[in-house]
Image 1: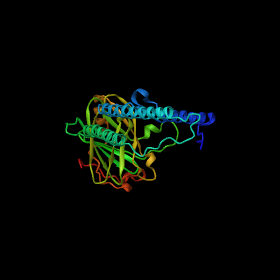
Image 2 (image 1 turned 90 degrees about the vertical axis):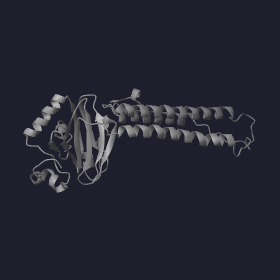
Image 3 (image 1 turned 135 degrees about the vertical axis):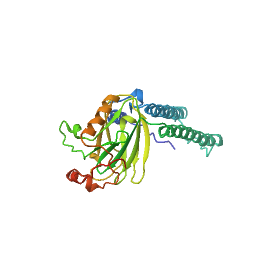
Image 4 (image 1 turned 90 degrees about the horizontal axis):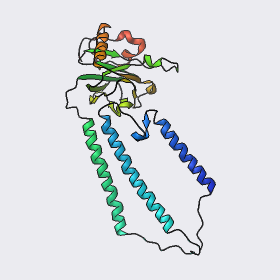
Length: 295
């Protein structure tokens, strides 16, 4: 019995290559302008902690590409070494199992997973370490569908309203803005007024959920001034996509000046975490209680 030749036609090969090229181009495009091959197509982080994330990401790429090259190499070897030759009309000898290979296929993946687990657990523990004394503490309050910010040490607050995405220039200026000082240790206390949200600044290379009745915490040290985008990363209702905010990283002097501006605007004290949605919608701003201090 002669085996059927399943060799791909040139047209099919060209189509597969074109599809692969489009996929790679889409990956590069969707990864964002600030991503680069040197970062493994990961955004460049702006915090001290992001270096650890980058190192873990790069190490994972190296390990996975090494495994991929090994598998592809063995596959190519088998295809070339045991390819059908003219005159081969019989099926090759069938082997049911090979004990050394079976052991290898079991031990190697287990070791790989153990290594990944070790480095991931190590870095996750470091990223979630809040034992150091922060220079600035900020209570980020998620709500449907915006954010409030309580600046604890300065004893002032900012109230965010839902973004109105008109598609016109200047919308960014209407977004809630979180101000942070550069080269200072900032601790975030994350809470929610209603449902689960997720506080995500892509440039931090980390995010964390805000959960009703619970306080989640993490710390960062910003290394670069600038304006960065933030959003909710947890589906939280009809206008989840409009739950946007900005982060302005500025010098310590500019940060202190902004705190003074908030105080002068009558935004002293800290907003309660117990306000319900009907009290924080834009049309119901008159229902907001007057801040009377820390809560």
